[in-house]
Length: 162
Image 1 (cartoon, rainbow, N blue to C red):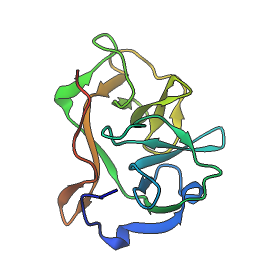
Image 2 (image 1 turned 180 degrees about the vertical axis):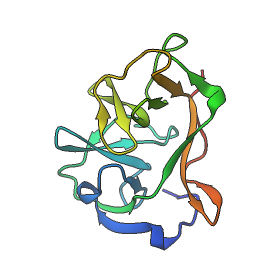
Image 3 (image 1 turned 45 degrees about the horizontal axis):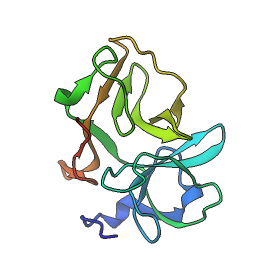
């Protein structure tokens, strides 16, 4: 895989996929094909691929026994396009959407053919509060980090709008 951007080495650390802290990003390297968010469900270590261009995008996978070499990025942020926002009275969440609730921000993924709400902190939201003022989804978003006052995208803008 060709990673499209040089990254400051100080932002990365080496490790194995299951040793990455929940909430960190696994940067594509070696056999890891997509930028992925590391998260836990009931002690199980999982990853959520975030690149919509990839075949298994947003389909979570278990990494507990996959001791693959990984580049780990802990300091990152999620940005959204407010114009792509919706509430559940306007549209239904779908895999790949970025979401924000009163308590958490994150992504919608798929786990065993069921929508799963993964937080940027590496946890899950059991069942979001669907009221208009408690949940907003976004169909356009990006992940990246700040470097010398500039935003650096780790992925091209993910545009999942219909």
